Image (cartoon, rainbow, N blue to C red; front, top):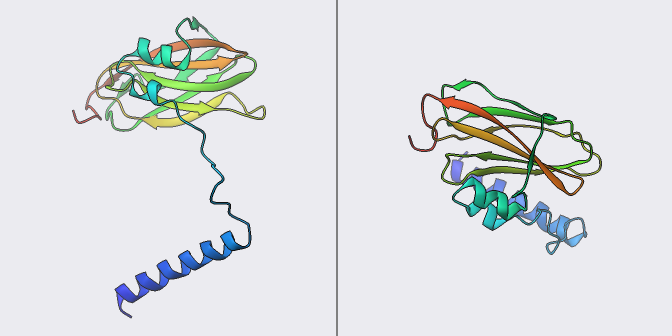
Length: 156
């Protein structure tokens, strides 16, 4: 069978399924499923500016935030990071890499009593401090860990 024909049939089938679901009211095109993102925080060029943009300029250091990351990352393109917050009422966890061009790397909102834990992989251009910023009870808390990078992941 011709590959172009298969591709066309597959695309047509998917499009018709979406159209039927929309017509049945299962999908509402006007409904937004994504949370609005903080453009200023992600566009900030330094950690102080990013902290200010998220409202965490006066964040207090906390030993209740645990950052699990390698001491030495062989490849900065995929650095595994885990953050556990033992701060009661954790509402969000943000990750910042101080020497990245855009320091705010991730922002996780936790709802409905979710556990204060995230696990992800981030890019790091060079050896830097990784900062976890936790919002809990309307206050901000922070912890840092230095990660040494042998091969840069941001074009280095």
